[in-house]
Image (cartoon, rainbow, N blue to C red; front, side, top):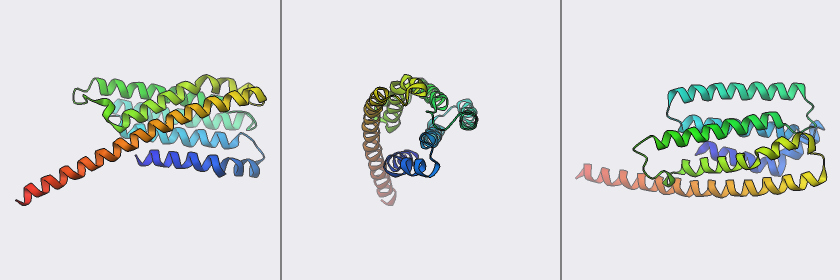
Length: 197
């Protein structure tokens, strides 16, 4: 869960301070979004590294990480930072949605996970799927329409609703994780008590 806390902290810090600071220093409006996209994707890829079980999936995850970094660097060097970073954002969406679907496949084929919705990872993955699938097409249109006032209104509305849903699902995940840690602690105490007797 620490990687999710890091992502949420960066998200909040970026929204409050970093975006405007980067824009003021660089005089490039969308540079802060490019940095945000890279950090966001790397946080989620790290999260998937911890929750995926299949060794081949972890190798593919490494390949996806290298692919994303190469595309981000290419996009940053070949396009102006005054435009929205649609290419890295679309690649990020596709990678994270594919990994989310694979996570569910992996969990559904595992006979030991009967109540998948009782785990924190389930709610995090649902949040990831809903956010990135809900905003995928908006990211595509943002490349050419980001400077239009009518598009900006729609973009902010869709992103706001998607972020709200994602954060509510992350909150549910944190609550479940807290309850899981309490259960683990009480089980340890009970087993230690039996051992001492």
